[in-house]
Image 1: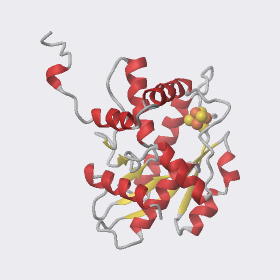
Image 2 (image 1 turned 30 degrees about the vertical axis):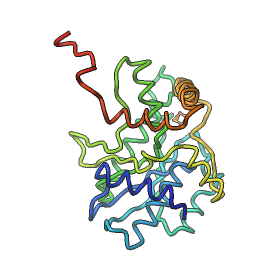
Image 3 (image 1 turned 90 degrees about the horizontal axis):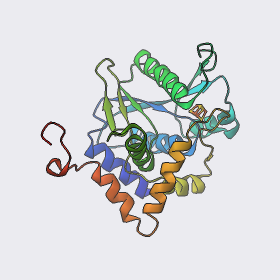
Amino acid sequence: MDKYIDRKINQAILRYNMIEPGDKVAVAVSGGKDSLTMAYFLSRKANSAYHIDFGMQAVHVRTDFDNSVEKSGFDKFLKDEGIPLTVIDVPVLKRLKPGRKMNCYWCSSQRRMELMKFASESGCNKIALGHHMDDILETFFMNMAYKGEMSTMLPVMKFDHYEQTLIRPLALVKEREIIDFADRMGLSKIACTCGFDTQSKRREMRSAIEFMAEKDEKIRDNLFEALHHPVPRYMINQETD
Ligand code: SF4
């Protein structure tokens, strides 16, 4: 087992109080390297003498236009690891209102809704998503560049109107570390791609972050840590300025 990734997931669990004793976690698996890596490590913890006693099961939301994940054979990987899998079919395209175009926001929100429903019906109080540190940073820069706000995906996200909590156990793991692990494990590297992909802005932000961290990888860590340490004294406050 890759001790480095395992340690980083442990740190995230403790730092953000992500998993608590008695939790039942629905682990969302797309079939790509990130979610399979997450499922692998969480399963090892759930089925060992880990200091937090919790349960988990995997769930895959299959859309009506993308079956590439089946081709990767990820269900066999999960079976070999002893991870129970539920597949939910969601007609994302068919749900589009007339005249509306398919896009990643709609697709993701429909799949997220089904995940919440599944978690609720199966007694899971947490839903684990496979976003890693680079996803969180890219979202931060995207929200600044295109929304004019400082916000990002949270490692732990509670909702006012849902009892489930979203968690991101890979929050402290970098994408290249996952790629290394996936290569060693022979995991599929298929990404969430289809003819409707509208994530070009995310790719632009990814390049910008790569450029910033090109000479010193520590910059990526510092950017991520900065999300935890806003200094109010040096932030512009509209009410007083
Ligand atoms: S790339 Fe395709 S499958 Fe992935 S979120 Fe966008 S629309 Fe959905």
